[in-house]
Image: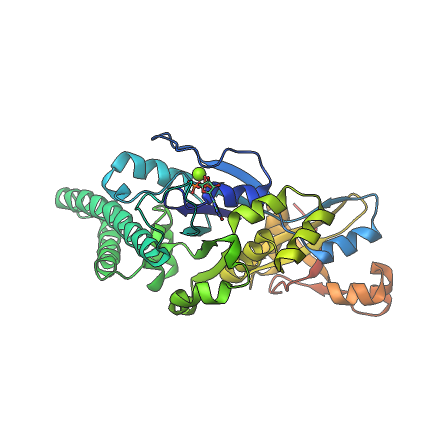
Amino acid sequence: MRVGIIGLPLSGKTTLFKALTGSEVEVGSWSGGKREAHIGIVKVPDERLDFLHTHFPSAKKIPAAIEYIDLAGFEKGISESAKVLTELLNDLKNVDALVVVIRAFDNSAVAHPDGSVNPMRDFQTLEAEFILSDMAILENRILRLERQLQRKKEEHNQKELTLLKRCLAALEEEKPLCSLVFSPEEEKILRGYQFLTEKPQIIVLNINESDIGNEEQMLQPFSEIKNHPMTEILALSAEIEMEIAQLGPEDAKVFQEDLGIQESALEKLIRSTYRLLGLISFFTIGDDEVRAWTIRRNTRAPGAAGTVHSDMERGFIRAEVVAYNAYKEHGSLAKCKEAGVFRLEGKEYTVKDGDIISFRFNI
Ligand SMILES: Nc1nc2c(ncn2[C@@H]2O[C@H](COP(=O)(O)OP(=O)(O)O)[C@@H](O)[C@H]2O)c(=O)[nH]1
Ligand SMILES: [Mg+2]
């Protein structure tokens, strides 16, 4: 799972990245045209995995992971610079969702590039710029396809042209591409383009420390956005979260309680990402390794096997499955078998959140 952090310059992207990954990169430095993306891996906290690990203490515990990419600033007018846009789109490759950071904090030491703090204006600037970037890519590609088609009528090019024109028409009406419905074949064509408005978004309002506890009110102007199926929205203070991330777990807890923060930025964002993308976890357990894996809801057993190893998908025979809650109740795999809660499932089985699975395969 890959998530790109995007936003206007000095909105707190790198600060949030540090809060999430605990990594030591410099904040606030104006990159002066140098675009460099930071990449960090975040382990997904999961109490169920912790519990399972207590039963296999000598095994390695491997949590699921989300990769966060701190993308270089997305400036107003970026869609007009083909080179910068190409670089950004390169960094965005295979990103499953965007975290869009919106500045809602005042900080006299860090002047807002547009002179004043106005979250709604910045949000609209970004969304408009996302639309313009996608349009720039589409217009380019449409021109080229039309030229190719004049030389030679090829059906797949014709199909692509029709599809891209439909996309462009939507964007001209300010409709993001995620609001359109595509057939699987169309999705396949579009996948190569990395359109910004096709990616699900988690909007993060980066608020002042003094606004902690006031999140609801801060989010009020954005309430309409909550209804978009491809969007989540939340408020946090990136700077405070970064400070908390640098403390040990005990101190962090005390600090969070003092400030009235119920959930860390990391927990909030991971929960939003799972909800937005419809993700669930399953587990594999054994004496070597106790591990959590992330898949999309409604994945069948062979697809889940494929996340562990492609051979397991190819040579899939069956899955031996026990639900986490049943395991917890009975206390061991042997007892689960005795109690008859251990199931054999075939190719058609849809994996559920919390399933503990052992795959049988043959290649
Ligand atoms: N007061 C305050 N300052 C912040 C907050 N988040 C970021 N900053 C400051 O804003 C500046 C820019 O932050 P940075 O994360 O580098 O922004 P980026 O350009 O979006 O990556 C830095 O000096 C940060 O310390 C916040 O939540 N509150
Ligand atoms: Mg930065």
